Length: 251
Length: 373
Image 1: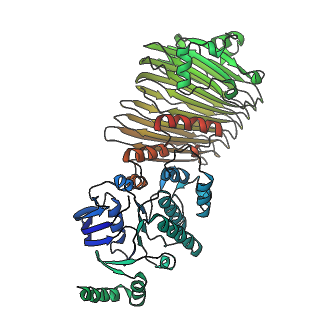
Image 2: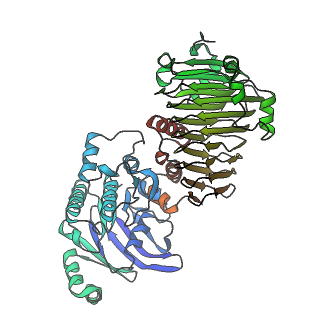
Image 3: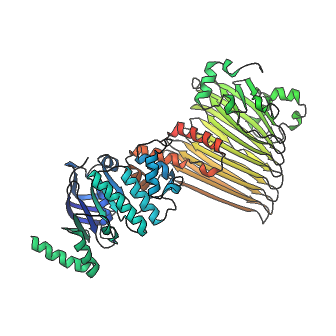
């Protein structure tokens, strides 16, 4: 289901700690946005809350996707609506081979074979030799990122949530992941929220917007590259002063 | 009996056997044996293996081989408990399998012990002798017919693995919710010989208690016990295995994967006794507890009587990882499907060193119960 994503006044607690405070953002169908922010600012929390991870408790606000209020839905219901998350730190799945996980994403049974075309994609992601290993167990950072991106793309989602797909990935892998992502987003007109810490992915993936999340609050603008250059030059504190200025100018 | 074809067996028995996964066609097996209720109704070695295996009812074997009388009850004490005493007083036969020296039996030898009559009390005494240098895989399926609900199975098994022999003994249990099961097994492993036991019980039973014991009497011999257990509502199991390492180079590995759920209770025991300066043993028990009504107790025992014995164990009991469930749900699996995939994954047998044929066999049985995902 393609559609607009609207996060309205979202406040989220994990345990006793309020991580997100009154976040609002809008992503129109087919739009892409990068999310920047210092460590611990709540970027991952936002994506996991949109995905519906149960430890992330919505204290206030709502999440509307394609006109449907998904705030109370579980992860499975959201995934059926086309929402998918590439986790920053996916859990080890003991006893479940990567091949099985990929087959699940493709809607295949465990004993089904991959088609030649599917094998081709797996090889492009340099994951063929990992097929018979327990998913994520002992995978390096880059291997996890490749496996996450591949799963997400195989699911053919309409809303792609990517949590730092460019961290710990070598240049060749990043180029590959980015090209595959860009190709998919262009063809499917899916929307995407992409957290990047390093900003490396900006060299390969185009986006219409960028959000900066600091201290659990967000600030969204057009032109991700300008925002990122600001952050690189003056750090997030400098960014915050600009953000305040721009916000005032816009208000 | 030798002229009987498998297809002549009553449909009720054959259909049930096929349903629980018994291999009945010759290309898949080196021989097939059926003991139903109190009687051996079929025993035939495949044509390609006639000169490598002898198989018959144990009572027939006693007539053919008088020396067998001296061997019986040497690996299992007939006074061990009320069940062994019961079999020693009254029994209906069992399988006798003699793997001839240096035979290489490339297909599994299949036996099926079945209870079909309601409230039947089956008492068998099985003998396996793997001759020097032989290699063989035995697949034994013990089942209660789905039309019968209440039954008792008491099986005494004595197994000799002679010098340089390799024997894989895979036992699959398919009981009914009211079956009481008491196997009593003793194994003797000679020099440079290897014995692997794979025990699979994934379907309902009322009460199963057993602890097969392997005694390694030769140099550089090896005993492996693998168990895969998936308990059903109300099932009580006390499953153990024991290895006694008496000589240099002896090795034992005990692996258990157990899932308790729906008010079932399991005690998983493992004992390794190191009586030599150069022996090694490792015990690995992993248990998964799926609800608050069930219990799971792991009791590993390591005993060394020589300072050079290297014995170790790992035992871990836990619940399913919620993060993993959420992760799979984000891959468009319902919660139940995600739990099924993880439980199926927990029972992964790829680490148990099984031959491809036996691994495939066990995996297909696990798929039958847990779903193929």
